[in-house]
Image (tube, rainbow, N blue to C red):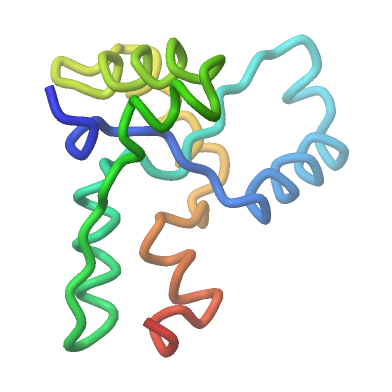
Length: 126
């Protein structure tokens, strides 16, 4: 299993803010509920493909940090990385798929990774 093809959940901080505002505007809808906010569920390879597409000429590749480097400088994060790498392989956990659906139902304008890059002007900087 390669770390490049493991999908990870992503959410833009602006969308977290929109959800917070929504919760204050309609508290009855959210009180006592647990939300897993996921705007996009994509792999490092998919992130690189999106950056390549937006760059109009450059090629980007995702390269995960080697485990030996993590062992030397960020050892405590290795179990989390291994968990995400396993979790990000098909078949995907039902809770992540439900979270993506729930996020989109509650806030349809939630940004995908590509939309986020465009919103931030990265399509002109890449």
